[in-house]
Image: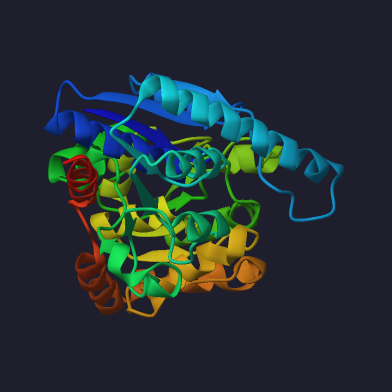
Length: 364
Protein backbone atom coordinates (compact mmCIF):
# COMPACT_ATOMS: atom_id res chain seq x y z
CA UNK A 1 0.00 0.00 0.00
CA UNK A 2 1.08 3.58 -0.66
CA UNK A 3 0.15 6.61 1.45
CA UNK A 4 0.78 10.34 1.42
CA UNK A 5 0.66 12.22 4.72
CA UNK A 6 0.49 15.99 4.41
CA UNK A 7 0.78 18.88 6.87
CA UNK A 8 3.10 20.28 9.49
CA UNK A 9 4.35 23.69 10.54
CA UNK A 10 4.44 22.85 14.26
CA UNK A 11 5.26 19.84 16.42
CA UNK A 12 1.52 19.57 17.12
CA UNK A 13 0.99 18.57 13.49
CA UNK A 14 4.27 16.77 12.79
CA UNK A 15 4.46 14.32 15.71
CA UNK A 16 0.90 12.97 15.21
CA UNK A 17 1.70 12.57 11.49
CA UNK A 18 4.83 10.54 12.27
CA UNK A 19 2.89 8.47 14.82
CA UNK A 20 0.30 7.60 12.13
CA UNK A 21 3.07 6.71 9.67
CA UNK A 22 4.77 4.45 12.22
CA UNK A 23 1.49 2.66 12.91
CA UNK A 24 0.84 2.13 9.19
CA UNK A 25 4.31 0.57 8.94
CA UNK A 26 3.54 -1.64 11.96
CA UNK A 27 0.45 -2.92 10.14
CA UNK A 28 2.12 -3.26 6.74
CA UNK A 29 5.93 -3.27 6.90
CA UNK A 30 6.09 -2.91 3.10
CA UNK A 31 3.89 0.20 2.98
CA UNK A 32 5.36 3.15 1.08
CA UNK A 33 4.82 6.47 2.85
CA UNK A 34 5.57 9.89 1.44
CA UNK A 35 5.23 13.13 3.41
CA UNK A 36 4.36 16.47 1.82
CA UNK A 37 5.20 19.55 3.88
CA UNK A 38 5.88 23.27 3.51
CA UNK A 39 9.33 24.46 2.45
CA UNK A 40 11.21 26.12 5.30
CA UNK A 41 9.03 24.61 8.05
CA UNK A 42 10.19 22.24 10.75
CA UNK A 43 8.72 19.12 9.10
CA UNK A 44 11.44 19.37 6.42
CA UNK A 45 13.93 18.53 9.19
CA UNK A 46 11.90 16.37 11.60
CA UNK A 47 10.35 13.95 9.08
CA UNK A 48 13.65 12.76 7.50
CA UNK A 49 15.03 12.26 11.02
CA UNK A 50 12.10 9.91 11.63
CA UNK A 51 13.10 7.93 8.54
CA UNK A 52 10.58 9.14 5.95
CA UNK A 53 10.92 10.96 2.62
CA UNK A 54 9.34 14.41 2.37
CA UNK A 55 8.64 16.81 -0.51
CA UNK A 56 8.11 20.51 0.21
CA UNK A 57 5.51 22.85 -1.26
CA UNK A 58 6.18 26.59 -1.56
CA UNK A 59 3.14 27.49 0.55
CA UNK A 60 2.65 29.92 3.44
CA UNK A 61 -0.27 30.90 5.63
CA UNK A 62 -2.32 34.08 5.33
CA UNK A 63 -1.14 36.88 7.62
CA UNK A 64 -3.94 37.83 10.02
CA UNK A 65 -3.03 41.49 9.73
CA UNK A 66 -2.64 43.65 6.63
CA UNK A 67 0.55 42.56 4.91
CA UNK A 68 2.03 42.76 1.44
CA UNK A 69 2.87 39.06 1.82
CA UNK A 70 -0.83 38.27 1.44
CA UNK A 71 -0.66 39.50 -2.17
CA UNK A 72 1.61 36.55 -2.95
CA UNK A 73 -0.63 33.98 -1.25
CA UNK A 74 -2.96 33.20 -4.23
CA UNK A 75 0.02 32.63 -6.53
CA UNK A 76 1.77 30.35 -4.01
CA UNK A 77 -1.47 28.45 -3.41
CA UNK A 78 -2.04 27.83 -7.13
CA UNK A 79 1.61 26.84 -7.58
CA UNK A 80 1.34 24.43 -4.62
CA UNK A 81 -1.87 22.84 -5.95
CA UNK A 82 -0.18 22.32 -9.33
CA UNK A 83 2.85 20.71 -7.70
CA UNK A 84 0.60 18.62 -5.41
CA UNK A 85 -1.21 17.23 -8.46
CA UNK A 86 2.12 16.32 -10.02
CA UNK A 87 3.18 14.52 -6.80
CA UNK A 88 -0.10 12.60 -6.68
CA UNK A 89 0.10 11.64 -10.35
CA UNK A 90 3.66 10.37 -9.89
CA UNK A 91 3.29 8.58 -6.51
CA UNK A 92 -0.27 7.25 -7.02
CA UNK A 93 -1.19 6.79 -3.32
CA UNK A 94 -3.92 4.45 -2.19
CA UNK A 95 -5.03 7.06 0.36
CA UNK A 96 -4.07 10.57 1.50
CA UNK A 97 -4.02 11.76 5.13
CA UNK A 98 -4.12 15.44 6.08
CA UNK A 99 -2.97 16.44 9.57
CA UNK A 100 -3.33 20.22 9.30
CA UNK A 101 -0.74 22.89 8.61
CA UNK A 102 0.19 24.91 5.53
CA UNK A 103 0.80 22.04 3.11
CA UNK A 104 -2.29 20.07 4.03
CA UNK A 105 -4.83 22.29 2.23
CA UNK A 106 -3.35 22.29 -1.31
CA UNK A 107 -2.43 18.60 -1.15
CA UNK A 108 -5.86 17.44 0.06
CA UNK A 109 -7.64 19.78 -2.35
CA UNK A 110 -5.64 18.27 -5.21
CA UNK A 111 -6.29 14.72 -3.94
CA UNK A 112 -10.03 15.34 -3.68
CA UNK A 113 -10.14 16.81 -7.20
CA UNK A 114 -8.31 13.73 -8.56
CA UNK A 115 -10.57 11.29 -6.64
CA UNK A 116 -7.94 9.90 -4.27
CA UNK A 117 -9.61 8.88 -0.95
CA UNK A 118 -8.73 11.36 1.82
CA UNK A 119 -8.84 11.30 5.61
CA UNK A 120 -8.51 14.37 7.85
CA UNK A 121 -7.01 14.18 11.32
CA UNK A 122 -8.20 17.25 13.25
CA UNK A 123 -6.22 17.70 16.47
CA UNK A 124 -8.02 20.69 17.98
CA UNK A 125 -11.40 21.21 19.60
CA UNK A 126 -12.03 24.14 17.24
CA UNK A 127 -11.56 23.21 13.59
CA UNK A 128 -9.67 25.53 11.26
CA UNK A 129 -11.11 26.99 8.06
CA UNK A 130 -9.09 24.74 5.74
CA UNK A 131 -10.23 21.50 7.36
CA UNK A 132 -13.88 22.63 7.42
CA UNK A 133 -13.62 23.34 3.70
CA UNK A 134 -11.79 20.09 2.88
CA UNK A 135 -14.16 17.96 4.98
CA UNK A 136 -16.90 18.19 2.35
CA UNK A 137 -15.08 15.70 0.13
CA UNK A 138 -13.07 13.78 2.74
CA UNK A 139 -14.12 10.18 3.34
CA UNK A 140 -13.43 10.20 7.09
CA UNK A 141 -12.56 12.78 9.77
CA UNK A 142 -10.75 11.59 12.91
CA UNK A 143 -11.15 13.98 15.85
CA UNK A 144 -9.92 14.30 19.43
CA UNK A 145 -12.91 16.01 21.04
CA UNK A 146 -16.66 15.53 21.41
CA UNK A 147 -19.24 17.70 19.60
CA UNK A 148 -17.17 18.23 16.44
CA UNK A 149 -20.32 17.86 14.30
CA UNK A 150 -20.67 21.66 14.54
CA UNK A 151 -17.69 21.78 12.13
CA UNK A 152 -17.89 18.54 10.15
CA UNK A 153 -20.54 16.20 8.66
CA UNK A 154 -21.61 13.97 11.56
CA UNK A 155 -21.62 10.75 9.53
CA UNK A 156 -17.90 11.15 8.68
CA UNK A 157 -16.64 11.77 12.23
CA UNK A 158 -14.74 9.20 14.29
CA UNK A 159 -13.61 10.07 17.84
CA UNK A 160 -10.10 8.62 18.03
CA UNK A 161 -8.08 11.11 20.08
CA UNK A 162 -4.73 12.48 18.96
CA UNK A 163 -1.77 10.23 18.07
CA UNK A 164 1.17 10.73 20.43
CA UNK A 165 4.76 9.51 20.65
CA UNK A 166 4.87 5.92 21.91
CA UNK A 167 7.27 6.69 24.77
CA UNK A 168 4.57 8.91 26.36
CA UNK A 169 2.26 5.90 26.76
CA UNK A 170 4.46 4.25 29.38
CA UNK A 171 5.31 6.41 32.42
CA UNK A 172 6.82 3.98 34.93
CA UNK A 173 8.74 4.05 38.20
CA UNK A 174 11.81 2.98 36.22
CA UNK A 175 11.47 6.11 34.08
CA UNK A 176 11.15 8.24 37.19
CA UNK A 177 14.50 6.91 38.38
CA UNK A 178 16.03 7.71 34.98
CA UNK A 179 14.53 11.20 35.16
CA UNK A 180 16.05 11.88 38.59
CA UNK A 181 19.49 11.13 37.16
CA UNK A 182 18.91 13.09 33.93
CA UNK A 183 17.63 16.25 35.63
CA UNK A 184 19.73 15.92 38.79
CA UNK A 185 16.77 16.30 41.15
CA UNK A 186 15.63 14.95 44.53
CA UNK A 187 12.92 12.23 44.72
CA UNK A 188 11.46 13.60 47.98
CA UNK A 189 10.67 17.13 46.76
CA UNK A 190 7.65 18.50 44.85
CA UNK A 191 8.54 18.94 41.17
CA UNK A 192 6.93 21.47 38.82
CA UNK A 193 7.30 20.97 35.06
CA UNK A 194 6.97 24.14 32.95
CA UNK A 195 6.68 23.75 29.16
CA UNK A 196 5.63 26.42 26.68
CA UNK A 197 6.13 24.51 23.45
CA UNK A 198 9.35 24.25 21.42
CA UNK A 199 9.53 28.02 20.97
CA UNK A 200 8.64 28.80 24.57
CA UNK A 201 5.96 31.10 26.02
CA UNK A 202 6.94 34.62 26.99
CA UNK A 203 4.21 35.18 29.59
CA UNK A 204 4.99 31.88 31.36
CA UNK A 205 8.76 32.43 31.21
CA UNK A 206 8.54 35.94 32.64
CA UNK A 207 6.31 34.78 35.49
CA UNK A 208 8.61 31.87 36.39
CA UNK A 209 11.61 34.18 36.18
CA UNK A 210 10.00 36.65 38.60
CA UNK A 211 9.25 33.85 41.07
CA UNK A 212 12.44 31.77 41.23
CA UNK A 213 12.86 32.84 44.84
CA UNK A 214 9.29 31.67 45.51
CA UNK A 215 10.30 28.18 44.33
CA UNK A 216 13.31 28.28 46.66
CA UNK A 217 11.20 29.48 49.62
CA UNK A 218 8.72 26.62 49.08
CA UNK A 219 11.48 24.05 48.42
CA UNK A 220 9.94 23.15 45.04
CA UNK A 221 11.96 21.65 42.23
CA UNK A 222 11.57 23.11 38.74
CA UNK A 223 12.08 21.56 35.30
CA UNK A 224 11.81 24.61 33.04
CA UNK A 225 11.77 24.46 29.25
CA UNK A 226 12.25 28.08 28.20
CA UNK A 227 12.09 27.41 24.46
CA UNK A 228 14.23 28.85 21.69
CA UNK A 229 14.49 32.50 20.64
CA UNK A 230 11.87 33.79 23.05
CA UNK A 231 13.71 34.32 26.30
CA UNK A 232 17.08 35.62 27.46
CA UNK A 233 18.15 34.72 31.00
CA UNK A 234 19.74 37.64 32.86
CA UNK A 235 22.70 37.52 35.24
CA UNK A 236 20.58 37.43 38.41
CA UNK A 237 18.53 34.50 37.10
CA UNK A 238 21.68 32.63 36.10
CA UNK A 239 22.87 32.91 39.68
CA UNK A 240 19.55 31.69 41.12
CA UNK A 241 19.38 28.85 38.60
CA UNK A 242 22.61 27.40 40.04
CA UNK A 243 20.42 26.21 42.93
CA UNK A 244 20.09 22.37 42.77
CA UNK A 245 16.30 22.79 42.84
CA UNK A 246 16.35 24.00 39.23
CA UNK A 247 16.87 22.37 35.85
CA UNK A 248 16.50 24.90 33.02
CA UNK A 249 16.86 24.03 29.33
CA UNK A 250 15.82 25.41 25.95
CA UNK A 251 14.26 22.13 24.87
CA UNK A 252 13.42 18.81 26.55
CA UNK A 253 14.08 15.89 24.21
CA UNK A 254 12.98 13.15 26.64
CA UNK A 255 9.53 14.41 27.52
CA UNK A 256 8.46 11.02 28.86
CA UNK A 257 11.09 11.35 31.60
CA UNK A 258 10.05 14.93 32.41
CA UNK A 259 6.40 13.85 32.67
CA UNK A 260 7.30 10.92 34.91
CA UNK A 261 8.88 13.24 37.49
CA UNK A 262 6.30 16.05 37.43
CA UNK A 263 3.83 16.54 40.29
CA UNK A 264 2.18 19.55 38.62
CA UNK A 265 2.56 20.84 35.04
CA UNK A 266 2.29 24.34 33.57
CA UNK A 267 1.78 24.22 29.81
CA UNK A 268 0.47 25.88 26.68
CA UNK A 269 -2.68 24.18 25.35
CA UNK A 270 -1.67 22.94 21.93
CA UNK A 271 -3.51 19.80 20.85
CA UNK A 272 -0.49 17.53 21.27
CA UNK A 273 0.33 18.84 24.76
CA UNK A 274 -3.29 18.38 25.88
CA UNK A 275 -3.42 14.81 24.54
CA UNK A 276 -0.12 13.90 26.19
CA UNK A 277 -1.21 15.34 29.53
CA UNK A 278 -4.43 13.29 29.42
CA UNK A 279 -2.31 10.17 28.92
CA UNK A 280 0.24 10.90 31.67
CA UNK A 281 -2.56 12.02 34.03
CA UNK A 282 -0.71 14.87 35.77
CA UNK A 283 -2.53 17.88 37.32
CA UNK A 284 -2.01 20.79 34.95
CA UNK A 285 -2.47 24.54 34.64
CA UNK A 286 -2.95 25.51 31.01
CA UNK A 287 -1.97 28.96 29.76
CA UNK A 288 -3.37 29.03 26.20
CA UNK A 289 -1.56 31.01 23.50
CA UNK A 290 -4.14 33.73 22.78
CA UNK A 291 -3.11 34.35 19.16
CA UNK A 292 -3.54 30.79 17.88
CA UNK A 293 -5.91 30.49 14.91
CA UNK A 294 -9.54 30.81 16.02
CA UNK A 295 -8.17 30.91 19.60
CA UNK A 296 -8.19 27.11 19.45
CA UNK A 297 -5.79 26.69 22.40
CA UNK A 298 -8.34 28.28 24.74
CA UNK A 299 -10.98 25.88 23.41
CA UNK A 300 -8.60 22.93 23.90
CA UNK A 301 -7.98 23.93 27.53
CA UNK A 302 -11.66 24.57 28.26
CA UNK A 303 -12.52 21.08 27.00
CA UNK A 304 -10.56 19.76 30.03
CA UNK A 305 -11.47 22.52 32.48
CA UNK A 306 -15.19 21.89 31.82
CA UNK A 307 -14.65 18.22 32.69
CA UNK A 308 -12.97 19.06 36.04
CA UNK A 309 -9.69 17.75 34.67
CA UNK A 310 -7.43 20.84 34.67
CA UNK A 311 -6.97 24.51 35.59
CA UNK A 312 -6.58 27.42 33.17
CA UNK A 313 -5.02 30.89 33.44
CA UNK A 314 -5.43 33.45 30.66
CA UNK A 315 -2.18 34.58 29.04
CA UNK A 316 -2.63 38.22 30.09
CA UNK A 317 -3.36 37.18 33.70
CA UNK A 318 -0.35 34.89 34.12
CA UNK A 319 1.67 37.21 36.35
CA UNK A 320 -1.30 37.74 38.69
CA UNK A 321 -2.65 34.21 39.00
CA UNK A 322 -0.24 31.49 37.85
CA UNK A 323 1.72 31.16 41.09
CA UNK A 324 -1.48 31.30 43.16
CA UNK A 325 -2.90 28.41 41.11
CA UNK A 326 0.34 26.46 41.49
CA UNK A 327 0.28 26.89 45.26
CA UNK A 328 -3.40 25.86 45.30
CA UNK A 329 -2.72 22.61 43.42
CA UNK A 330 0.40 21.68 45.39
CA UNK A 331 -1.47 22.16 48.66
CA UNK A 332 -4.69 20.35 47.60
CA UNK A 333 -4.02 16.66 47.00
CA UNK A 334 -7.75 15.86 46.74
CA UNK A 335 -8.13 18.24 43.79
CA UNK A 336 -5.03 16.74 42.15
CA UNK A 337 -6.43 13.23 42.60
CA UNK A 338 -9.76 14.32 41.06
CA UNK A 339 -7.99 15.82 38.05
CA UNK A 340 -5.92 12.66 37.58
CA UNK A 341 -9.05 10.47 37.57
CA UNK A 342 -10.83 12.72 35.09
CA UNK A 343 -7.80 12.99 32.82
CA UNK A 344 -7.71 9.19 32.65
CA UNK A 345 -11.32 9.20 31.39
CA UNK A 346 -10.36 11.59 28.57
CA UNK A 347 -7.19 9.76 27.48
CA UNK A 348 -7.13 7.97 24.11
CA UNK A 349 -4.05 5.71 24.14
CA UNK A 350 -4.95 3.81 20.93
CA UNK A 351 -5.43 6.84 18.65
CA UNK A 352 -2.60 6.00 16.23
CA UNK A 353 -3.85 2.48 15.63
CA UNK A 354 -7.50 3.52 15.23
CA UNK A 355 -6.58 6.16 12.66
CA UNK A 356 -4.29 3.80 10.76
CA UNK A 357 -7.05 1.18 10.64
CA UNK A 358 -9.45 3.76 9.21
CA UNK A 359 -6.92 4.68 6.53
CA UNK A 360 -6.59 1.03 5.53
CA UNK A 361 -10.40 0.70 5.39
CA UNK A 362 -10.38 3.49 2.80
CA UNK A 363 -8.02 1.42 0.65
CA UNK A 364 -10.01 -1.79 0.99
